[in-house]
Length: 408
Image 1: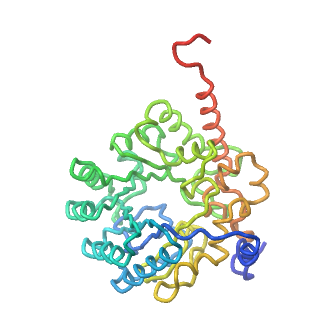
Image 2 (image 1 turned 45 degrees about the vertical axis):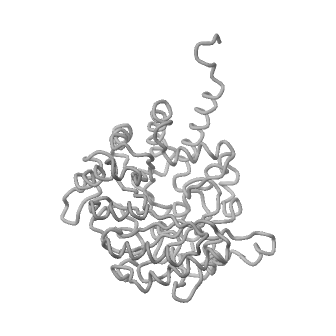
Image 3 (image 1 turned 90 degrees about the horizontal axis):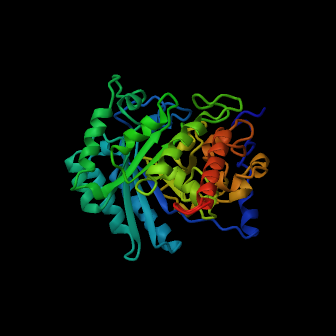
């Protein structure tokens, strides 16, 4: 077996011929989502975190906070990219670590600098993804002033959440998160509430988890599969035919579809339904839509989506920097092109599967295996197949059911 890094380009997509793709008519999709790592550290010590607990430990070499100079370079590069590619809208995600550790003034500077650099005809949307612990009135006032939507990470009820999402001294974070969410969901700031992100823990009852999140009255929620791959399988994902994560998600889908689907969106389910009806996906997790996202680290390095850090050291790196490299440069990299070429990036096993147009191979980092790289099925292949076929069957029955009150 070839070990990662033993031979340049030995792991897919290292040797992907981008020039050949261009000659065949493929064109890259411009970047529309920019994730800014405003702070590289966190005030929680979640034991499953891909940033701090998995393969890539690059965070240790990053400055704690993104400087004003880096933010100015970022603003110029975003405006340049939008102008060159004639984009009408871009989305900026203020991220970390924990972005609120950067403080209100640095967040304000980021928002104002990027907005000021943008051309008049470019719409710039802002969101922040936070663990919610520091979500107080000054932050919410800032976000309200600039229309920044807020997503919060919560893993269920207090017991389920605090099993993993703890402070460095072992104390749970649920009550502090709950306090922040109550402020966010109040009448003054409810319009900023973007939704909840919850990482799946098979130890947590799916319905109890769902109901605890539903009680927080989010407009949207999403369930994230824990990061893992074929070298480092996720917890509870045995090498057999069982489907523990698919079963866990199906329990929630059935409850949601029967009762709350009209009131709260669950992103994973909604995207699968879109795909089953022949529409494009707006999610990395499923489907074959081009991924048009970059990350800027606190030191100004341009990287790919940070979940790749779960695969191996340097998996997200590009060796590009906002001080000297336009964002268009990213689009010529084999590792970035691989996430924009749809079916051409799938393994033969995936292409032979009837669900591949919907599954899309699953989340890209979950496909990694040393020696072959990312051209493999997802480590969650069986779970995804079971979930997708279950949703398809439920929709089929629902569409062909007799209207209520009419004879069979």
